[in-house]
Length: 149
Image 1: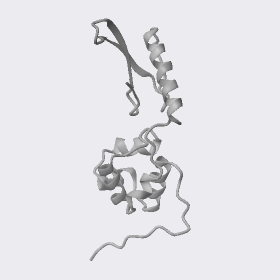
Image 2 (image 1 turned 180 degrees about the vertical axis):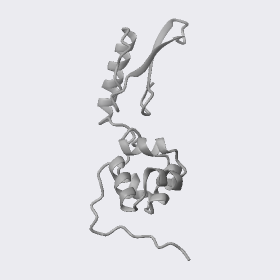
Image 3 (image 1 turned 90 degrees about the horizontal axis):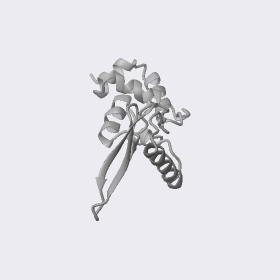
Image 4 (image 1 turned 135 degrees about the vertical axis):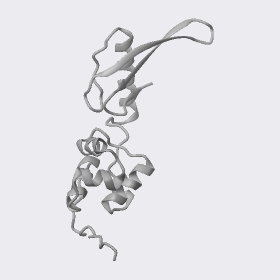
C-alpha cells in the first residue's frame, strides 16, 4: 500500500523567497524541521539555515533531495533561489572595490553584504609577473556563502 501524496491546491499562492517557500511547503505537508531533515537527508541545522534565509541557493542535487522530501518539482524551489543578495553586476563590482580598499587600509570589522555578519578579512602578499610585491585583499563570511575574491 503506497502513501497518497496530497497535491498542492492550484489556488495556493507560493511564498516569494526560498526560506518562506520551504517553510510554507513543510507546513503544508505537516512536517517538522526534524521530519524534513530526515526525509531530505540534511542536518537539522541546514534546514534551519534554509528557513531562516542564511542559505538562499541550493546545488542541483540538494534541490532535488529537498524537493522530493517536500513532494514538489525542483523548479518550485529553483524559481525563488538567489545566488547572492546583491543586485546587478555594477553593484557587485562597486561593493568588491569598496571592501578591497577598506581591507587594504586595515579595516577588520566589515559586515557581510548578504547576511550582516562580520567578515573574516586578511591580506595575501604576492608578486606580479615583473616580480614586484603586491597585496590581495581576501574576505569571507562564516554564516553565508559570500566570498571576496
